[in-house]
Length: 114
Image (tube, rainbow, N blue to C red; front, side, top):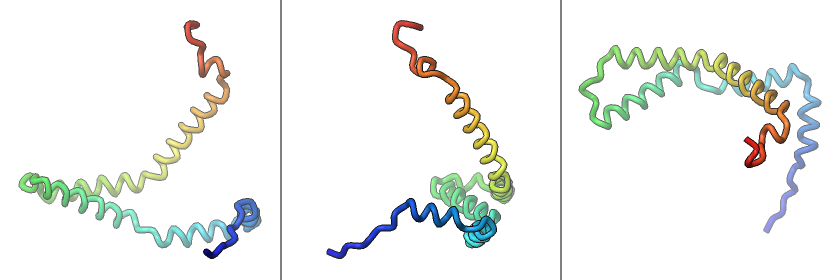
């Protein structure tokens, strides 16, 4: 059995915090450059969806307009994903803030005292 030393998480976090902000952004950009474009993701989603529809036997009701509309709908949703995620993040932070202001008795009322 070969034993390997594991990297402790604390030194790794320290190193990451010491990296200049510009380098962090460059690294993030390089990672994103390997991601698929929104158009490609939308195409693959629509393709998979209609393959499943055809497999289930609804092929006769499909037309070109339905496929094109599905593609553009998927593409629009993918383009809005950052805005939607930002709205969700704000809502979650708001809920967490509201919960942090409540007392223990507000969160867990005693039975019989309703």
